[in-house]
Length: 182
Image (cartoon, rainbow, N blue to C red; front, top):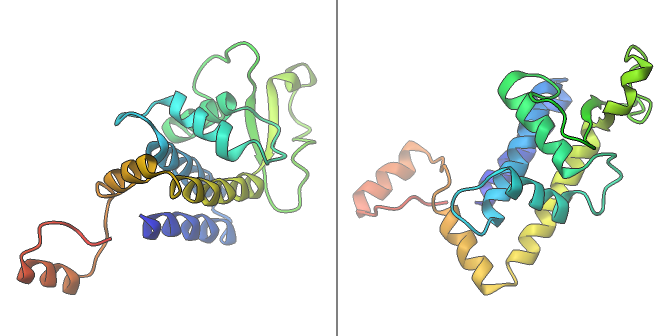
């Protein structure tokens, strides 16, 4: 499991270092999805699990000007349609737009119509990434202290996509093991 989380972190950084901002954002949202799955009380997760995880581990220590509901809308729009949002805004929510590098996220682009600016919030991609990293660390630290949560985490991590070399696969086949090493 930790190998997979580390790969997500490294992949986000590679994307940002190479200015693949859209891909970095998609990986950030996939990372939040992944953490919500690991923390959910039920085997099937939903947008409510995503929002709960964000409310507990992502947003409390952040300076992000958004809510978990706005993150969920942004995630759905970005992953499914490459847009800021794929639905009509529920009352009290805003579309998330992004900045990166040294640009100031709170100001937002000047080309947005002033009458629509109250429907928008602006988030720095690096800040969102940093909040995900911090949330991952807090989550893993907390969950490792609770036996029932730790057991659920271990069960779910056994279903994780595992990557191994051909040599590792051959060794598993020779020994006769039916499970994957993580």
